[in-house]
Image 1 (cartoon, one colour):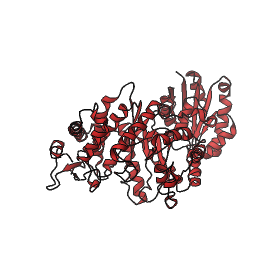
Image 2: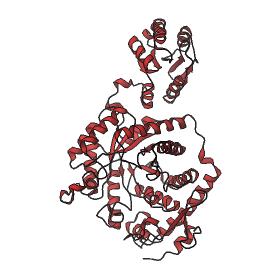
Image 3: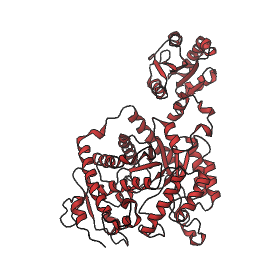
Image 4: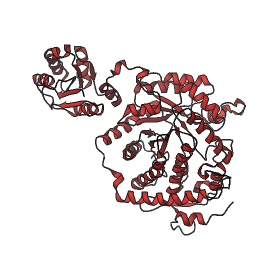
Length: 545
């Protein structure tokens, strides 16, 4: 094990930066020796010899002129160690760091602006200034391992013109604040990419970037080849699913597939397929990615939550998503957990709901089916006031970290007002990163709250009833009812899977009623009396369509 010795030098008593560096060094496998604040030069040199240090880190955060003289003296005293192979790093304020670089003694100088993963990469043996694309893992699973103990940061981005989006991606990559850029493409790109005759010029740029050719995707990917070389991914589309998947992998090295089970079709007006047909198509594209070892995210549960479905429906959808992915041969499954959906949930009940999702899907995991947790803030939960929205983003991410996610999908604080610009994305990611760093220094275990545990058990029990009701709809030829398209279609048409916003929908019933109780949990209730209903009571009243 290599040893790093670190101290605040001279009269400087500020050691927060030193301690943070040592924490990262420990995470990278170093033995760390902290000498404390205001350590004289000679004591640092003596400690480096005594501890047989491989790396010495010193910090100074006071007057630049004083710091320059002190660091010059330190360089003279420690030069023998450097010639013997000991490495030296400095950390301080930008003005002092500038003087430290000019001295030319230190292998690496940090001024506090560096992303945490760059400091971690240095502790793992990489000089940030020399890092190239090959130093940044270009698959999701490899990048998750590389970022430990930090989660990947993902953000959605797509502006109404290709050029604005391209320039924005360049800026995001250079800012090094996120690991995954999720390209938000416009509706015609999702539904009619291979059908120019169906495209409407008046819709160009509606809802995202108007990519129209493979070369457009390649240009956006090329824009990301700088900075920390973020991964790219994009929507799976609403038609021509496998053709789109092939192009995504070829042009942007699509980091993972994200696709629902029941949505992006005629049921929600976003695609040409009917419900059962779209389920089969979605299964095919999951299998396509699974065969190639590319992760799959089934972004299903929150679509029910966004339509005010009770928590139990959200949890059932989470299980169906993981079950589907495994049945389709997916090896790496990304479980998306959107908090604040619907927006009125309390933090305790929201956390309980997510724990229930994870508890239900945990038995599915194994050597050939790995589960990666991805959390995000609710799309509809942001207040319009910008300051309040920033606070909401930070608080939500702090809560999400109780699940120890592998990926945090940051949703910009501007969501209630406008689509995020590159500047908005950078700010949102910085807010999220700070919340994440705070939790990694020691977060209380909120999952042990008795109210959270009780609600989690309640949801798991209720969800098993609903899953049983879905399974009972299977015809005689359905070997696996929970991944059988015909059975799942009946689950919607009979109202077992339902949401209040689906009233008058051509496929769903929309007869379920829900309300948020005094605990902050979203329950199914009797439409007439408003009294809570168990799933056994609710599903037993549903007749075949």
